Image (cartoon, rainbow, N blue to C red):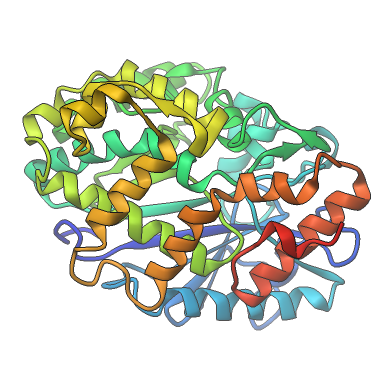
Length: 420
């Protein structure tokens, strides 16, 4: 995205699990479908506007825009077409793709199998330093949203706005309420485990909500360099001394001229992912345009307060009551409304009403899809409703089998669609 200005293009990355077609247990066979014409494993495949790539573990595949996309228009259909192609390849091995941000019964210690092809040195180094046999490494799938910037002024505006939106993302996109075969205390369990996955070197994750730095020089000084220094004793060869090591909720990729947002759980289908991406982009744009408060006021907001809101939404998603009046004022709530507090789901409905007025904010049918999500609640809530407090293997296979169908058919998941 180097050289592109704010909102001139977008990058979308969607991660999916490969599972057995009937039992839905994980199948580490990404290297069977990520192959060239000679049948040899490769790290990347290109299918026009969409590319496929490997991830840390061999049961996950990533579908992504093949370079910056100038518009979200048409992307949901293109992703859906590639999901269909992947499922056809997997069907030969009795497998299929599964959505959502965590597998509901995977054992990350027993079932971990790292990718062994290209870039395996990077993954082996991660494993040696952090011991990747945990949910926060091998059992999580997310949507990454990449937004371009050019120069310090645009970076400062984008980083300030994104920091304010990050704590609200689980309230919109949580899709991981179950793991180890039981209900989690967190509707966004992926994020809970993600927070702790780099405890061996805490500076790698930092406070999740990125520190209040708004120039490239300050970012290197306050975020990247301390992280690299802490890494040195563990990685003398510098294999991981790159911007990708940074695991905050949004990371600056100055070499690409983009900010990568990492706190969005992957949804049940590309149309839902793109609808959420459109709303998030629109909300960030409202703040970048200083619709409610000035950039200076946005940049001054305390990181620890944002972190507290994120803790709440990680657990309760849309039902979390946000009582930080100053935070709500930053998002356009009146003083009286801000003083009363607001459920996080209502904050998103408030932002949706504002974003809907932006020209071309929701191409295709993404606005209707977004309205449906806001009305029904995050996918995590719908999954729990469909389970009816029954987390037996039979019930989980029924619910997650229907989720696999939603992915294959590019349609929204409704709790009532799963038979009791």
